Length: 100
Image 1 (cartoon, rainbow, N blue to C red):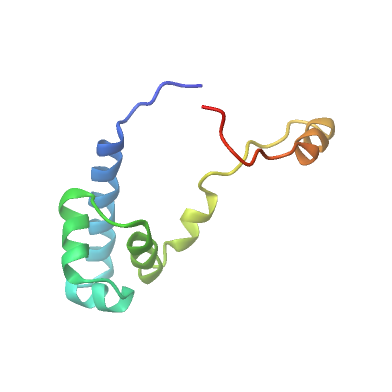
Image 2 (cartoon, one colour):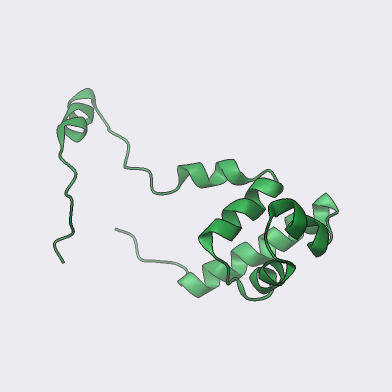
């Protein structure tokens, strides 16, 4: 596993900054986009200023800007390198609980 290049806070700030650029490029005022997404304007402002936002709100905001599809690739299992590996992965049982 590679070491993390960014901290969670740095990622939050980067996402917030990118989101604000996308909103402004699309020509939306905060109030308009918040209403379109079904989130409060205060939540949108807090997200853009600090990166703090609920997961539900960020999905709604992403949907309102046409970026929801980008979330579908998060947390994907690793791809198989061969048919045998693909078969082994598909036959693996997913644990119901963590060990640690």
